Image (cartoon, rainbow, N blue to C red; front, side, top):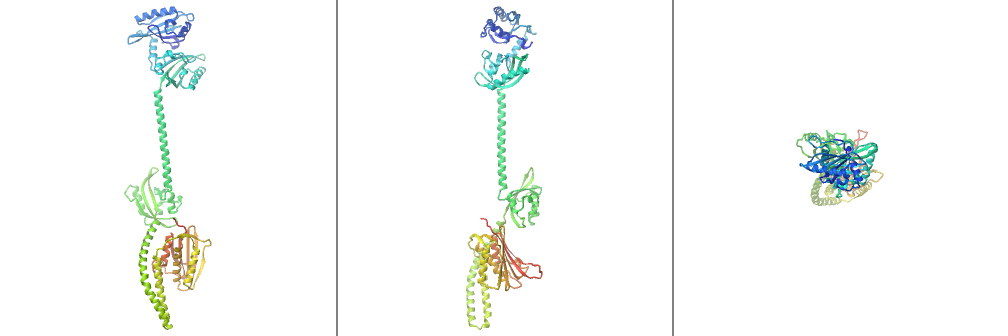
Length: 611
């Protein structure tokens, strides 16, 4: 079969000579010469001699479908060879293909009587792809039936239209025309593209095309194009892209939500009012802010140390054993109470909730720590308060029952003193002194057990101490000299002034009672951040070392003097603990190892109070 551009004209006709489709420069030349471009009959397009030859050959082909040939001349194109080929379908000749050539004749029939041109024509006509041809300026000269099926235009409606005008996008039309000119200039014979084409009904269809330009001497003389409807493929591709975009957006949204959730979780954990930690390989790998506050250790110290070092001796080994069992998956308690040592050496009580977890993909232990030191202290104070309340009820009745006989004894000794000789006055004075001592003990018991309303306010502790000393000096004149070492800046404390006066009063009275005569008492105050220290020192004899641990027990007795210390120190200690402090007692040591004098009572309280 010869090349496509060797065919000067190819016309598809019905058996009556009506043109179905036509293409080629020779056909255009004949139609223009006869001024019959709008005719649909080949008989009226060809010159009369050629028309008669065509009619005779068509009649003969109708009777016997076979390839036929005849020649005729045109002034502009002499020696034209015409060949007729029957287009047979289901053993019936439906149409006839007419080829006209001004050069060598087209191939004759193949073996079996079916010509190459007929075979080619069948291929073009029955193709599932669109096949078009166009001239040098892109004007359509031929379209196969699939063009009509896909785009809706018939051949008579579309032939003569520039192919670019069918593109839906105006910018694409300009680009396609420019591309055709560029192909001519650069000698490009082929190009591919995908574009949106207009259908006859106004809708659009996505077409993938491969154009072959016929370029001679740097000019496009025409070309033919294979086009394929890829709308469904394009839609599926777009759906997949939309699904991908939707999936990516959904994934991004979920990732953002996850990141936001993680940020909130981290914020909650980091700022939680309880300690949170993670331990891995025997070391702390994460602690939150409150965990730092619990023991008052720095973050750097915690993250480079072994956590068991902070656990009290009584629990350390047991805790290690539990951790090892937990990591092995053995059942152990999740919740327990344990002591830990703070940075300043205090032993705190904490409640721990421990569970096995993973951290950075490896086994770890996570714990929640709650400092219950204050809670335990309050529980103890509540128990002590309950005991004190019970003592108070007994003390009130006891005081009422005892005070009356004591009053009678005191009055009786006074009467006797007025009546008896002075030689007996000393004995009566001794009796009155013992009565006064009993009355003092009763007052201490009642004071210790009495519940009073608390009024928190800002109190100048220096002023409070001075007023207590002035009252003591006025009520109990003794040969005791007071020295002062008070802080220059008044130590202000948020407290109940009555409780502060009571605490200082009980310490001073106990100190004066145990001086064993004249002496000197030095009172000092010092404030360090929110810790207030009040210290009372005297030059009395050293306390027995074995007595010191029992000084806060009611009526602790000195073996050396047979003197008891009443409830004063216990009352002072109880008040100090209410304010987060304590009372400490001891002997003053000096460079003179032989010295047996000098004692101190040190009271510490918090100067600020949580609401």
